[in-house]
Amino acid sequence: MTALSDFFIAQGDQSFRGKQVYEWLWKKGAHRFEDMTNLSKDTRALLEEHFVINHIHVDAMQKSKDGTIKNAIKLHDGLIVESVLIPTSKRTTACVSSQVGCSLNCTFCATAKLKRMRNLQADEIVDQVVAIDRQSRLYHQKPLTNIVFMGMGEPLMNYPQVLAAIDKITSPEGLGMSPRRITLSTSGIPKMIKKMADEGVKFKLAVSLHSAVEETRKKIMPFTEHFPLTDLREALEYWYAKTKSRMTYEYVVWKGVNDQQADIDALVEFCRFAPSKVNLIEYNAIGDDAFRQAAPEVIERYIQVLERHGITVTVRRSRGKDIDAACGQLANKSQA
Image (cartoon, rainbow, N blue to C red; front, side):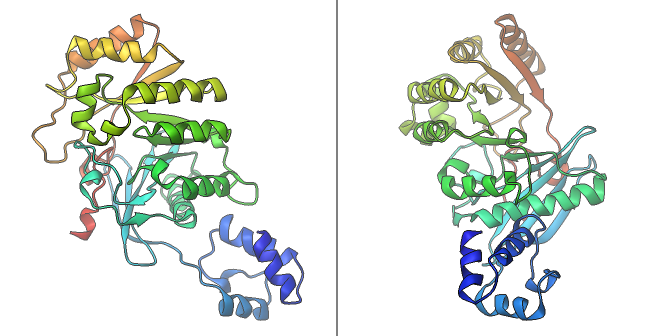
């Protein structure tokens, strides 16, 4: 906003024009200068001359029978990312992307099979939220209540732009959403988790864990060869010591991968060092026979053991599976 105000002062105008333009961009989601109706025609022409708004465009939209909406978002350079509106009776959640493709190589995730083309800019992330808020109001008659960074990409591999986007989303001059309604989901980059803790972020942290057995985690998430569980645990201990905010472990249980008692015991042990909760996630097939949903009795055993040890556990049933909008399924099929 300061840069905009300085621009107007340099043009011989009033500094408050910068705030007006900023609010049009970040609070009202304007895509064209001509929509900024409280500015004079001359001012709008001046903006047209000096600036370009590289806004996103909802290129395709799919609706699930459960009310979920998946968007194929076209960026200014023609690349596509996907975002999802997830409705329930009490809330609507935006699942937003942070990268075109993904920097990591998790073998169970469709997005990881895509080449990472580039990081998203902060404005492209915010625009996803604005677009989903409009859909929430139009199709579900209520404003967006929550945001999860669980779409395409690893948010901590695009840290500066993700943090800048969250700042605009939570700023009174932006969307004014509480940071406690935002969850950043990471596959676990220890040094970046510590950096967030040092910077005193207020949003929630979720970690895609999926196994607390080192060798198993390396097989399903090969990049963790460089980020062992001991480093992750140390970073998460640091996170809790600094923020006093418990983390959520996202955990899919697969048949023949992490469905043994030893896997459950390892998860319990990993949860002991700091307050946390476990979110058991229903697996969504991506056409790879190596990964199959574990038997219901295995999920129930996980629940019983975790609860017996005083660990909060929930089971997340996937939504939007009929349109490939569920967790792990975002793969830009609209471009195929």
